[in-house]
Image (cartoon, rainbow, N blue to C red):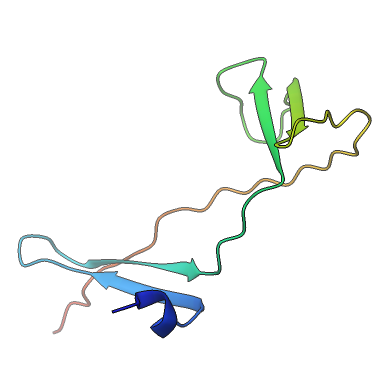
Length: 93
């Protein structure tokens, strides 16, 4: 059976809980078509960690996978950190 033919793209949610643990964990994941990358980008930071709101310094190196350099390419940065979400059971009275 060809699973790819029956696959629906989109965002899915998953919930996990066990009898041994209180509450449940949940999250979302995206199923999308694979597209071979055209380039590679490596980022090296000058320090191991930082504090929120402080400046980061480092080096960005990009190259096309078919061999050519990306000299002078524009660079933009966007980063985010998300906390894990967990539901606690409600206590009944």
